[in-house]
Amino acid sequence: MILHIYCRGVLDSSSKRLVGSAILNLVSLPIPIVISIVRRFVHLLILLVVWWFLRDELAGYDPLLAVGLIVALIAIFYKDIYELVIYILISLLIFVTGGRFWKWMCAGYASGIGFRQKLFVNKHMEEVVATMSQEQPREYQNQYDRILNLYLESGRQDNEEEIDALIEEYWQTV
Image 1: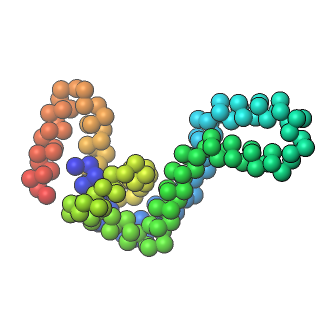
Image 2: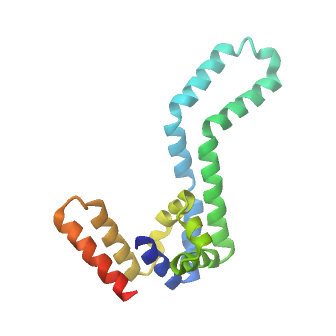
Image 3: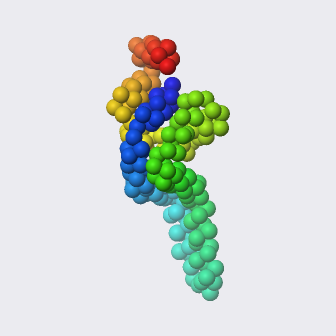
């Protein structure tokens, strides 16, 4: 339901807002890079310590040492590099198409088209949804935030009942 509300909001958004959000995604890329380095700090520290102790023995293999360090860094950050490249490509696709790609994806999700539904709930798309959720018209953003907040606090009985009532009301109006 929450993705359905999100998609309706995207479909009602202007292309200008979607492109602006994609630009914001691209501009904020240093943040996930720093987070990735902090998360992999122990691995990076181990690599640097091993390199430090073996640097004298490997000094004669200078070109090979550089290639080895690059391969080791890629091995440490492979998953993060992969996710970052996918995130950049999706954001660029939204930017280049003027938001039409994102509207196409949301239209497919909302209409139940299998391929786009499957692709839309992919982990990488979820990251883009999360970062672009603030660029919707206020009406959809309020619904989205309200349901998400109720869901996050669903341990309380009154919140569970309100979620159930909202879900039932929402599907009756759609």
